[in-house]
Image (cartoon, rainbow, N blue to C red; front, side):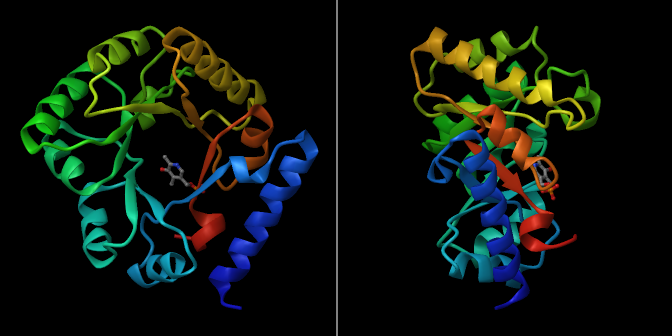
Length: 220
Ligand SMILES: *Cc1c(COP(=O)(O)O)cnc(C)c1O
């Protein structure tokens, strides 16, 4: 056993236990390893264990790993500036941090020019922490969604957030937001919430994906 396989085993049993507690199927929850500030060798090791998708926060830092691991997909989970949008679309398979109409306009323009299809997620922040981590607030969410206009090049996958872990109700609020939009759009939408410290809370509230950095790869 390597330190990585030991951590992955512990993580899987945490997910398993959390699912048992609330009667969910562990197979219905995606474990997305977050490889920011982790060495390439560890990402390679995880890819060799069979993980095929990784979350990265920084476009520039991601590029080295993306070039070295052409067999796996990288998902951008960190804030995206307009001037990095082209590189992001070219190199990442999904963008999880779409949070303002101007960014949507830029991404749609570039996706057409580059002739690419990329899944996008709307990052939401219902808790007023936007200045720190990004995310559309409740009032601007609809305008972000409207800017997408159902563009087939940027299919909406769902909603991602970093709910404040001290407030369990925040996880349920995000799940309800997803339910409401699912009803409104008639499309299946996923919700991505839960990190190393709060994945149990997120699973209980109904997350479809947990994004795990330190509990997967170790401390950064
Ligand atoms: C770093 C990061 C994670 C993973 O955080 P851990 O606490 O290390 O599990 C998840 N989501 C986002 C957006 C992050 O920036």
